[in-house]
Structure formats: C-alpha cells, structure tokens
Image: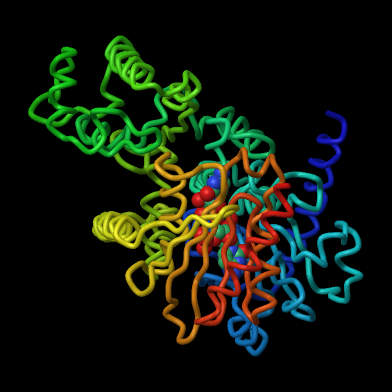
Length: 479
Ligand code: C5P
Ligand code: C5P
Ligand code: ZN
C-alpha cells in the first residue's frame, strides 16, 4: 500500500515536471500510435495543449521507426511529445528534445535505468513518464492514454478527458484479465466516476451491448464462444424468442442495454447452463460477466457510449491511416467524422473476417513451445496483432503456448511479426517484449511491446531464423 502511494506521488511529480516543459514550449508536435490507445493518448495530449494555449500539431504512426525519428530530428518543432510509444526507442531518441508518455517496456539495456537516471543516460532533453519505471505494470495497470492523462491533469482542469483514458486502457485489453481495470487505471476510473464523466456497472462482458441488435450480440460472441449460438443467426433468434425476449421495440432492434434485469439474468443463466453442459469448466462462465464502463455524456445506444465499442471505432480509423478521424471523434467534432468512422468500421470488420479465413486456410503450425501462422500478403500488417489475439482468444487453438504471426509489410523487404500470449503464460515467465526486441535486433530489425503482446519488423526471408531464436528464448523463459 505504502509503496503504491509513493509510486503515485512520484508519477505525479514527474507529470508536473513534464507539464512545465510543455507549457514553456513554443510549439509541440505530438507523435502517437495508430491504435485506440494511441489515438486516445494523442487526443488527450492535443486537447490539453489546446486548452493550455500551446501551439500544437499531431501525427499518427504505426510504429516509431528509425526513419521517422530521423525526420523528426530534422524538423523545426520546438518540442516533440511521443504518446503511447517512445520507451522502446530510447537509444534512437538520444539527443532529441522530447517528452515520452508511454507504457511499453523500455528497451532491455535501458530497463535498469531508474526514473532519475534516465536523464543521465546522456539525453538531458528527454523526459519520460512510464509506469514500468515506478514498479507499475504497463501491460495491466496503466495504458498509453492513461499515462498521458496524468500529464494532462497537470496542464489544467482536464477531468473530462478521463473517459478517453478509459477507452485507451480498454482498447489495449487491460481490463480483460480480471474483467475490470486495475492499478492506476482504476484510480483514473474512480476519479472519472466521482466527477460524473464515467459510470461503472457489473454486466455482461459480451461485446456490443449498446449498438448490436440482440441476435447479433449472440451470433458474433467470441469471448467466450457460445455453444450452439455463436455463428448461427437463426439459432440466436430462436433462443431469444424461446425465452420470451422481445427482439424489437417500436420497430427498432433492441440491444442489450434495453433489457431489464430479469431479461438479462434469464439470458445469462441459460448461456451459462449451455456452457456447463457442453463441458466447459465453471471458470469459463465467469468470463460472461465483468465491469462495463459507460459515458453519461455520450448518446446511449451508440458505440461512443461504452468503452469497448468506442475503442473498436477508433481502431477502425487508425489502422487504416485515418487517425485524424479518430482524433476528431475524441475531440467531440463528430459531424462528418462519425459517418466516416462507421464506414471504416464496416471495412475493418470485413478485413478481420477475411483474415481469420486466411488463418484457417493456411493453418497454424505447432512447433512445441510456440505456434505460428504466416499471412503473407493476405493479412494487412496493421491488423496482424488483432488477428493473432483473436485466434489465441478463440479457445480453438493451444492456449499453453504463445502464438506468433507473420505478414508481409507494406515497407518493401520487411515482414511484420506479432505475438500474443495469455495471462497464465506470462505468470509462467513468458515475456514477448523481450523475445521480440532481442530476436528482431539480431536480424537487423526492430521490435518490442509488452510481456503479453509484442510486435516487430524483420527483413523478409528471415522468418525461419527468427522462429528458431524465438523458440529458444520462449523455452528458457517458460522453463
Ligand atoms: O501498442 P499498445 O500498447 O497500445 O498495444 C497493446 C497491445 O497488447 C494491444 O494490441 C492489445 O490487444 C494487446 N494485449 C493483449 N492482451 C492483453 C493486454 C494487451 O493482447 N491482456
Ligand atoms: O503490432 P502488434 O499489435 O503486434 O503490437 C503489439 C504491441 O507491441 C503493441 O503494444 C505495439 O505497440 C508493440 N510494438 C512495439 N514495437 C514494434 C512493434 C510493436 O513496441 N516494433
Ligand atoms: Zn498502448
């Protein structure tokens, strides 16, 4: 308890120091990641600077590459603010005047630098706020948006940005393990609730409670998969009708949030029975329920009203080079952006469905301590990690070993690698961030991330070598 209090205080002190730098800058250029956590992080930074009257610009990148850093070095921005990235590239950033608010694991050899020493590493113009430096797990307890929000709070009265910090954390699946947010994320959550910007309920953890028509909610359920329902629309309709759940109200589809308590209970207990009678362990039924976060200032029955759906909408923008649309949505500029985002979402869904079919047809290669698939040019690199996560989360593959995924990158001569593990594997020693960064570096590539989920780029044709090294490392870690 005492040490977590101390960590919180020192996080705050560092956030204050960073805010001072930002307020004194002539202009700030924000560089953020393309996923939901990156877009919310960038939006929080952008909005807080705007309110503080600081001149600012923003760009979204799929990864902080050496070329990007070179370009930024040559630019005439007074100060650069990296959000949801940067800690994995500290060596490359040496000498650049910048702020980093990130939750990725710091580069291996720089991990040992504590929060004070990072400055003596030879970059006096670099200010980094990263939970890992305070003994806080950046994979579970604080997201890129969250750590950026801590700085935003030091820039002004920005409590209304707490919902974005929650969307970021939920988008990074930080609420998945325990089915609720933990650590500093939870502090941000509680504060947002207290100020009236967020509501917390225990409800179903099925995806799409605001916007999905009831039969679709069941048909598309994949975490967990619902026996006899998932993938079968008419079975879902029949199931609801049999249990006296009206599907429509005033000619409009009802969604989960329209149901009363007794209707919800009826559906969930029936599903739990189905799971148990199909042989799933009781623990599996627990994953039907979890904390749900909604935003009273957003319109009910829209994707923006609930954190998980909000994050999907942002992912649909950023992963298709439309981070600016996501930014507008986060900043409340909805008119045109929202329609565009919904259009992108339809495309995103199709890409995911098609990619899963590719995995099915290519097959998953089981290699002892790991398993992998290669999407070649048939899975876009920007959704490779999402697809790998869906595959391992589906329960239809071996969950004892991590999954690695390859696909050709748009950058000539490069292959994108994504890896995903499970909570249990991490507890047994798995650290994918270390695997990704070390194995890719040996092949002249670059990589990093979190223990449970990490990514890399390697030169094309080096996949075999990469797998061999990865296998050795995973074997050692999980021994
Ligand atoms: O770059 P960033 O930190 O935002 O992304 C984190 C990644 O880790 C996300 O792709 C998320 O899906 C993944 N993750 C996961 N399982 C967890 C936690 C995070 O797959 N339990
Ligand atoms: O791209 P993917 O979703 O697989 O990335 C998983 C995690 O690894 C994300 O948090 C991402 O930001 C991180 N990553 C990284 N360096 C890379 C590639 C991915 O830190 N080169
Ligand atoms: Zn993140």
